[in-house]
Image 1 (cartoon, rainbow, N blue to C red):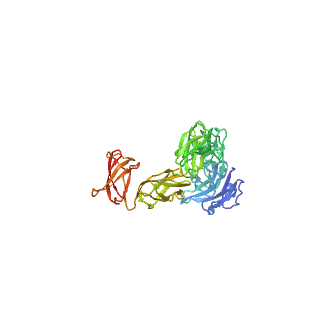
Image 2: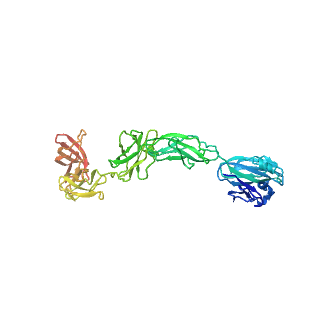
Image 3: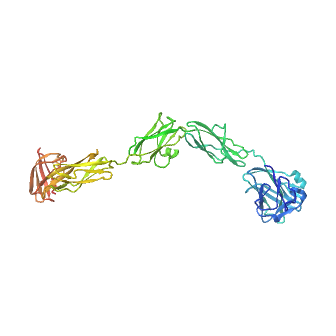
Length: 550
């Protein structure tokens, strides 16, 4: 920028300012005049003076009395950078003790101090010029670099004599070229890759004025793109999968100076595609995808239920992995899905050799079968009853969720009838009941069948008692050597009253079932009485047991 000057006085038209100058009459900041915004911390019009109209730039002053305080004059620079500063501090009418600090906002860049007799002026280097012509011809400038746009002249000497003053007659600034390049040290860090992107971070640069942006290259510095930003992160997009790139980054300042470049070679990852699921069970599924990176690193699979796809870092940290195979598809049999869910997903990423990740793809949603599907019919109910009398309820159900409707039909060895003769169960009606009416006394075997292809529980051993008579159903029979008798025929069996030892009844031609259990019914048996049973098998083996009549 061309030079800008500010002349200090009390009257606007007291002198004719040069074309590059404007004037200050002691107004407070912000005052804008001549394309410059400036002003004093507090209004100083009472401390402004016209001195000599013939001196043009040194024709007046605005002063601040030294002693109790200092004051500041502010100028807004058009931009940060290096500026050439000139000034004149002095008074035609009196000797003074000048003291001025030139600041970049709050940072002091130069300290000027000198005693000036009347008609002498201190310049920007602190040298006292002995006359108007001496200042005009010989005043020296100083080049100062500002990192902000706030230039401050702090005027006065708080520790000085109250009889002295610091007086500004003229101030001038102009921008000078900045030839100092920024500095950028450290290294580039890769923060992520996909098949078409590489993300990086890098240190911040420094500059004598300020770093204004960073430039980036993917071709080893043959060409650069200006980011127009001071952010220290960058994602390169539109790259080719499985390709190596020579990355460069350099810092830039407002003058166009650039730093030396940081460099790194990094490859993009392979491309994943064609994600699919198959062989879905209640908690299992086979997941697959194709890759351009055959036999390149590892493929990671991560289950999720709903939500959004996980990041590559999360998939690698918490997913299941396997070595990338030499042919597609890359398949994995997975478990742990939620049964009966329609919101199952798997996120997949491939980590190629050298740390280059692929793109992330998601497979799903897909539905798993309902968990706990029925495999058998359950069958529970009473174990005894009376001839000709309907039993209490038998209940049938299933050990899981029923698909469709299943018809269950009961049956009994030894005769009798059921009501109803068959029942239906389903997911909406998971249980049903029926009763059994025995036609004759003795031990019966009750069982169920179904038309749903399910296994059947049972049978149930049921003792049918003659009306008014007692029935004894034995525990599993064991021979004297402790072994189960099995399904055997008994030559005879006698029941003796445990309390009296008296023989109550003897039965012949009694048969135990496959579970080594038999039943006898006789009017001589008293319900609720415990009997000692003694028997002889057809093969001559003997045994004994205890049982209570019901």
